[in-house]
Image 1 (cartoon, helix red, strand yellow):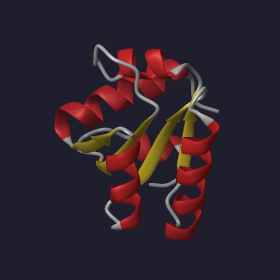
Image 2 (cartoon, helix red, strand yellow):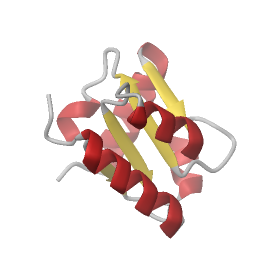
Image 3 (spheres, helix red, strand yellow):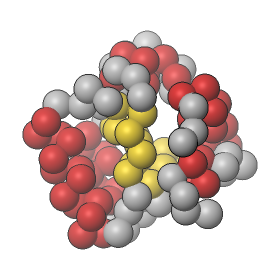
Length: 104
């Protein structure tokens, strides 16, 4: 199991060098359009959001990684000054974040 430090670091690299979608609606759109390579969910994401994204990700075959912290901590890991319940990795850039979910 990966540590949250590795995940936070790889998330920052993905944001800096790749392409991500932040927030429930854009993550859902990325999953439904097949652009999302992985979804990162905050551990305390609201049940409706978590359920929806797990459902759509399962259909799309998109792996989900649960961030071991709150939405506020996920926001901080992404270096954003707000809560984030979900992030879709569209292009991992130079990060190895997809390996953390067991998919290279």
